[in-house]
Image (tube, rainbow, N blue to C red; front, side, top):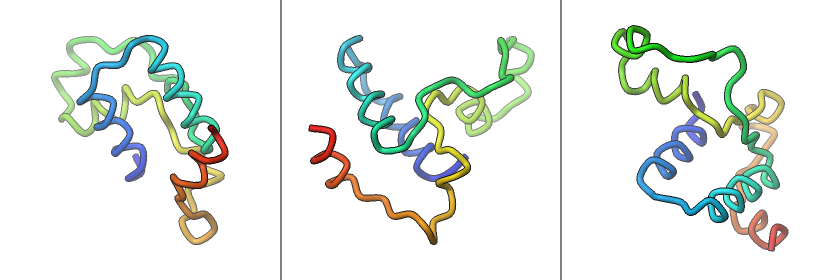
Length: 89
């Protein structure tokens, strides 16, 4: 899990979103290049699976906002929230 995925996960976990607000937030992230879909092949997580994992692993397995591999190279890409917000609005 990348740092930006962790930051998004923590942000979402600490806030309650109305359905419309959650949709707009996901669209904003998609506009910025973050995929807003569940991880592939994660399937249903049983209680046994969750008991064997620590909090970081559970967060990674249940994340819904994912940085695509194509943009994970930090030497080629720059995070610019201001520019993304200006373009989105």
